[in-house]
Image 1: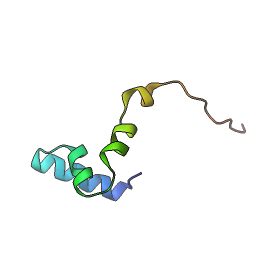
Image 2: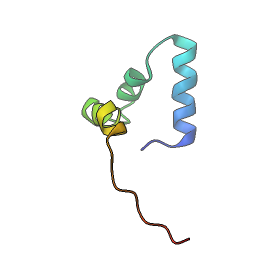
Image 3: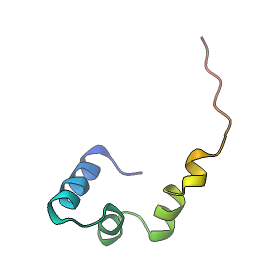
Image 4: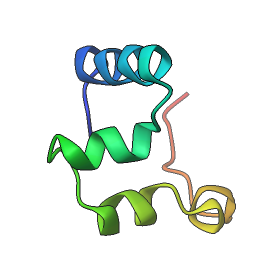
Length: 56
């Protein structure tokens, strides 16, 4: 995953240039298109999944 500093730089550049975050991340070589597609897949983000148990 990308860190806070990197993501804020990308977001700032996207706002200033009107370019997409997806394209900027790929151009910088931070992630491949395949990695981004997998990470940003709406089905993967919304599908039910097991949550780790926490000690309360």
